Length: 157
Image (cartoon, rainbow, N blue to C red; front, side, top):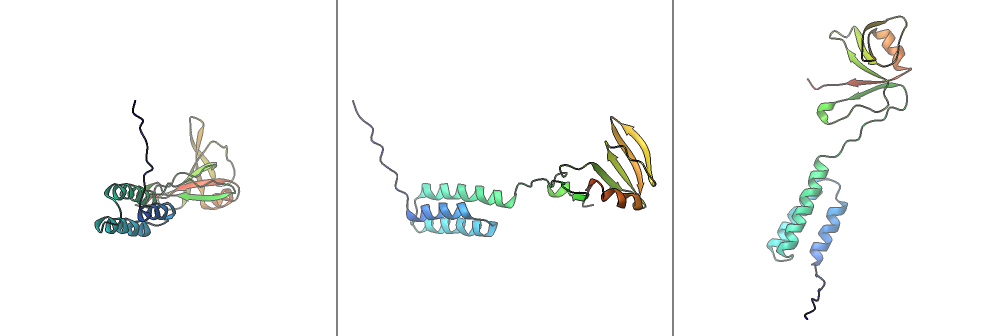
């Protein structure tokens, strides 16, 4: 019966160092620099071809992560207006009580909420599935944003 002996794989020092550099890399530019260094080292025989292919995979994955970071949504902790831009990959803030949209001319606001609001400058327009739609004057909106967490979608039109 034959016994298989596994010999430890010896990696070059250049490979080991570049793996560590990719691990701590924090910008796309530095990632590109390390990818270029790996290519140079493979071209001049300082690292093996399989090490170069592994480094290239690690570097490209890291570069992709740095170029497209995962954006976490804001958390509304205190009253005010929280803006977000979905076209930039931002998500609606968590913990908001009211969604606001400005009118076309900016004379008033449209608010969508599960809360029942009343007072001067606040007019109920309609109710659908437990969501109230209000037309609110600018003055009433200023008072509401001191009391509630409000989200506003900002588009790049």
